[in-house]
Length: 480
Ligand SMILES: Cc1cc2nc3c(=O)[nH]c(=O)nc-3n(C[C@H](O)[C@H](O)[C@H](O)COP(=O)(O)OP(=O)(O)OC[C@H]3O[C@@H](n4cnc5c(N)ncnc54)[C@H](O)[C@@H]3O)c2cc1C
Ligand code: FES
Image (cartoon, rainbow, N blue to C red; front, side, top):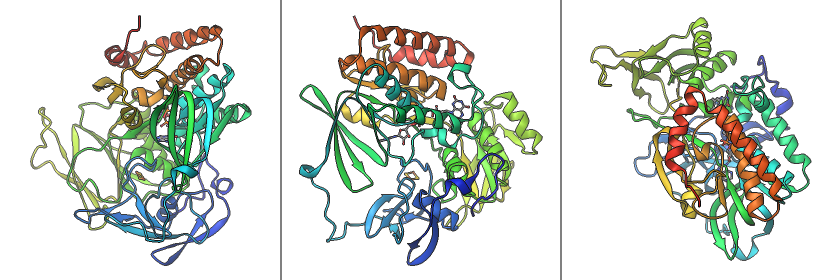
């Protein structure tokens, strides 16, 4: 179901021309500018594929192209990520049933035909970290290529309707969607930045003294990007927790629900159970209520709420119970979520028999944390370490965010899970450092790096930051 009224967002301005696509032969109304998964959800279609081994139904989970649970066949071509592929008039979409073969008539793109693009600095990821890296690298004098696999710039910011916390200079008090607009405008103003959207980077290689980034545009065209240095700012992806039937359609990461509601104006369902009472879970509860969706409860395994008191108080005032020391035991339903069973936990984190409660919901939202998206850095050969304080595996790097491979820099959630403010500051450092490495910036720019480092230090001096600093200490490479 589509949202037409919203206290903050005006979807009539965001939706493009009305078009028709076909799902399993049935015509579906869609709007230009939205992804296949969003159009199908708006039409009430939740099951998008069936798994390859046990043929279990699968649906949207991350909505940012990172989990592969939304694969469909488009015009006969399998393995298309429906959450980041835009609809086109007359498109024929089919559910993907396990492993599917390319049709005999389909001709895969060839290397020799790949268009080639060169710049001083190639930046992968156009969220707050990548955008700030691009803007600062360009200002320092570098030519820049900025790649993102989404159809729009802004990363996680494009779905954050709430006002951000943090420092005034880094947009505290401004809504995430507005920050995305400001950064995009700044990037587009600079003629030395070339932007490639709907373009997924799939590999990083050394070629002579340059870095080669291989990418795929719109699922069909191979592109080659060459840079003297690279910034990887690919963000993070939602964590999954183990419970029975955790793959049923209707179980989403919190960010996917925000993408449905806040980016595309599609209601995720009618009744929701949220797992996780950190800031993300609490903000999500509020945003769901704003969109007219009932939030039955938030369950939290810890003995107390992890998010800010002010968010928790707001959610409680709206009548949403927060059940601490509770967890989800299982999801129930045939082809999609129909119920969720939760239970109280004892001091050893074991469910207490007899405390089970059943919630009649059609959506389960997992807000249980994020993990850094380090796949490209891993493939490129950067050294990795598992650092709990930073959310999972992260790369080793120095103070200017250069990894153990010379010329490859990292910034934002990919470097460790934090916030948009720190992502932007790290983007600034990595962007200037990459421009310096490429020989495109003068040494005066070192002063700007120092300023951003000082701001980061100040920002991380709070209780959340101290925890992150402990993690950073463990991955820091000290260069002579
Ligand atoms: C619900 C929620 C609420 C939040 N609230 C706040 C808040 O109030 N204040 C705050 O400071 N922070 C907040 N945050 C955190 C903040 O949004 C993130 O920390 C920030 O967006 C991280 O920026 P990033 O640029 O590192 O990553 P992202 O914003 O995730 O951007 C990464 C980009 O990389 C692209 N990408 C990934 N892989 C590839 C690839 N292979 N090829 C091409 N492109 C790729 C993605 O498409 C994406 O656009 C919130 C986050 C969530 C989920
Ligand atoms: S890849 Fe599309 S939902 Fe995760």
